[in-house]
Image 1 (cartoon, helix red, strand yellow):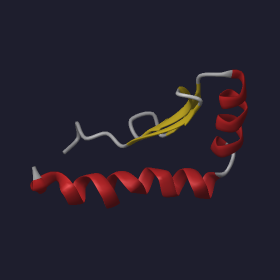
Image 2 (tube, helix red, strand yellow):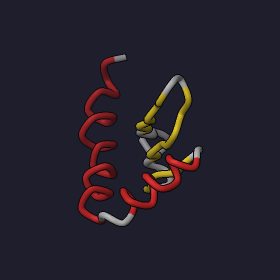
Image 3 (cartoon, rainbow, N blue to C red):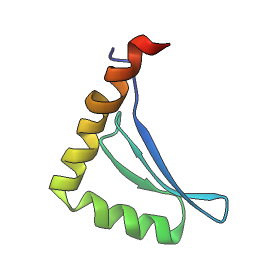
Length: 66
């Protein structure tokens, strides 16, 4: 189960502006606006903790379905 990765991407106008990856454990911005948003979300430790928990909550729960 270590190779499972939870990814949450945010798009605007068909362009990915930022992404949360459970392997990194933080948000990464891909545009100027996305970098600012990623910095904002990364500074909130409770939100980052909740996003990290999504891997166990969502991904590992659904492993056996496929």
